[in-house]
Length: 470
Image (tube, rainbow, N blue to C red; front, side, top):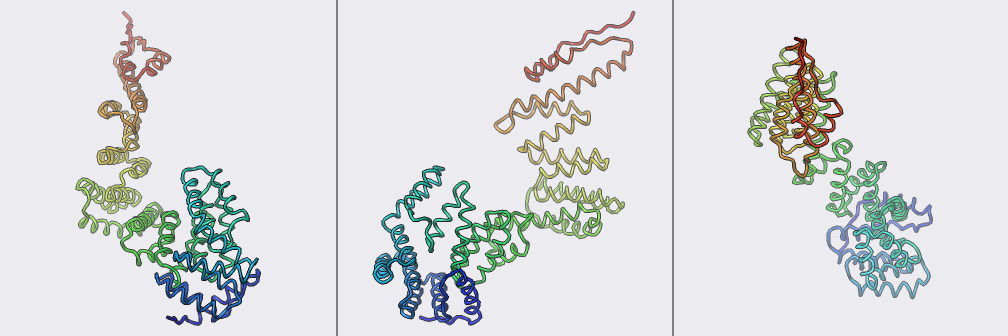
């Protein structure tokens, strides 16, 4: 069964082939390129039989071309048609003995059949971290060096998974892709390695977006790599257009949907953090927040806090305190998303504006809604100590039980700080009450010694002797 290929596509492939020819690779005539494209098209759609038919026509049309036989033999191996592949190997050895195609396919056939388990064992060595053994085994398996045909894809992807192997693997795949510009499998492999390097990741993503549009590529393969690339880039670097285009094809992908949400949230945060834009973005974000809260599922306590801080933000905006309103709206957004730890930075912003009570309230609410967060708990305790509320800090520290994520040592360190502040306040109060008395408190050295044995023993320091004038 034939399939008509648009002439513009063939012409574009011809230009790519000319570029490869400059490096010494064969130039395929347009009719030949059409047969190769048909083979890739049908293989991408799971019709290996029609792909084989196209390549058999190619071999018939190019009987003196070892490259045509290599194309057919490689397809036979991918389809697990080993009897057909054996015939191709025999014919290459008989008719094109010593050619690069005959050598490459002999290696590919050997790895796919006789040495299949050996190659699988090398993969396993890499997985368990026996890298030196894996590299030695690769050299034994490929005594003439890395393969240069399609099995080179498997070879270099395996090499890329070893420590310090990515650079050499990328160079190898790049050479193969340049030598096979009309074969999308090499482009897919190249894009996969480009995504793993920061300086080529965006270019790799662009290449995948182009491959998704081709009719001779398995869309699911390209989209799988595209999704992995978007997640690797993260909300800060992933292009919004690429995310939206991917989700238009795969709206069910929860991870990429979360990535898009994070990107939108980051954009909102930037708008609220910038003095130049916050007055402009505040009204719209407040309105959308109110609408979202009316429809939101989520936890009732989180929604209640979000409404509270949204109302405060509206009030501050009405009073023309836009910077304060922006911080309060960020707090509401964080409660709405249940991103409680981000409230720490917002509390710092409120504190810097002189809104100490609001900052403390925000930390208390966030810590209450996320009791498992050690970071929030310790930040709240430090805030209480820093603002002279050592008694509240001590109560919180005594109430929290140390565990795997929060050690008794971490608890005792904070408790010592809180107790020290409480005792300082007591000394100060006593001096104010009895200005003529000499108060002999334990020395700093003694206090430190007691502290090293644990906050509990330090808190039981001896009472200070008191000497007053007659």
